[in-house]
Image 1 (spheres, one colour):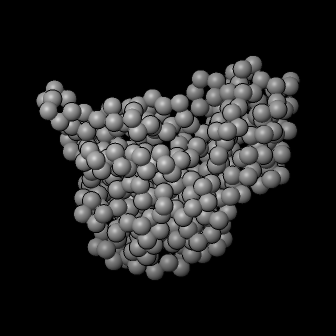
Image 2 (tube, rainbow, N blue to C red):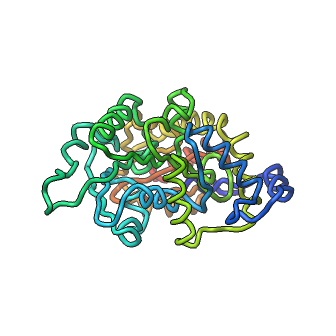
Length: 343
């Protein structure tokens, strides 16, 4: 029996229809702007996000880095949550490659308060301090369990940024999950940022790729940086075709992932030794703490029984639902967790 793999929604696999679309895609040289499938993906992505332009890139990390490099300069600073992907999981790329510092803010749920951000903006008249260039948001928030930014919180940061002359970058790796959870068009979420990126290779189900969207002049700088970083790919339409199909077929079914994550969370909350805040389970991520068993042992015992999960550090474990996890798999995972925790 195949394992129930709850480590990440990056583990989605392309099905036969997606493989056919990739094989049959018309292609050209994307560096010359001549790949028709890449162009179509970028045009569609920009329209969905309500932005003038878009660029197709290899990963979410590259998309975030390009957005930051295009919005800030060496010696400047961006503000981000202390548990954000750009601060925790991107190898210090903004600092290493752009000379851009990240000022991390600690939050209880990954949603930075407007007043908190305002307090973190550097004064323009103090030459001892770096200038603040941008605010980086993450929606949904990975390390905080897939929580969704309330629209009014996003709007508050956006208003503050405009008042203070700052840019806003939105790490929307799972922005479609946020939109589905809020039951609003994804463009309404993206409207609160100057630049926004999203992953095609997570819940949407494509094998590779992310898209960065924003103003044409900012995206032109991002394209230049993409080339500098070695990201100028050629006949990339084979990958873009998968992204287009993912947008066609992957968005509506995200609600199934959310429903299964809720079922999984409610079942886990009833097990001995599990601490889980159900209010934080809003999309497809389930993060919980173990107070009786070490996570490493728990995950090893689950793996031995055919259920895979992720260690979040401390006593935290993360399970993620995706299109490879159906309702039967969720029940199997709960049975395994119950057996392991009750042993």
